[in-house]
Amino acid sequence: MRAVARAQPDRCVRGGVLEFAGPIAPGIQSAADAIVQSGVRCGVGQPVLLFHAGHAKGDMPSHHLEMAGRHPEVNFRLGHPFGLRPELIDLAHDRAVAALREMEGDGPAGLLLVARGTRHPKANADMWKLLRLFWEAHRADFPLVEAAFVSLAEPFVAEGIARLRALGARRIVV
Image 1 (cartoon, one colour):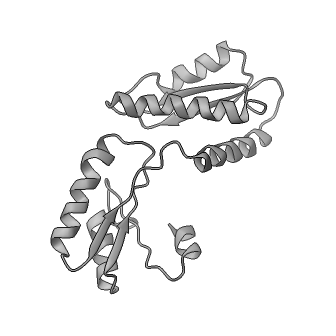
Image 2 (tube, rainbow, N blue to C red):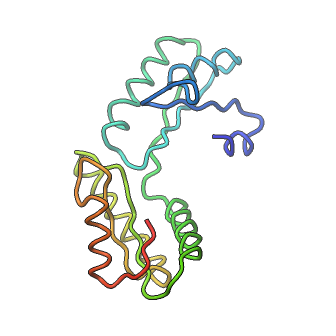
């Protein structure tokens, strides 16, 4: 969020979290209240989500409606999850290469791309699309790429690591 604020110094930038709001990170409605108090009359809520799943389909539209209801004088717009953007793939590549440089040893490098996981099959399928697009663009650096999920969908992280090892990866970036 700080990087966005620095890149857009003429904009009022605030962040709010969907879950586990507290003293460090306010909730979404508190962030909306803060931008309204600063005088903003047109605001964009940009979800920092990867794919269209539960939070993007239900929670964020619900928060958007609540913001609009609480502040009818403000024109609130709701952005979209990041999805299969080339910039996201390039960012993942840059970070993976940096992590690989810090590893000792040699041998084939594997990359495990990890998402939260959901019960929405299309969102999980988008993770596999992301994996394929990553591999197409960056297989010279990472010939072995697998996907895994933290929860709600399989394969889980341990299984993803095991698959990369079985494919011959001796160095694995997660």
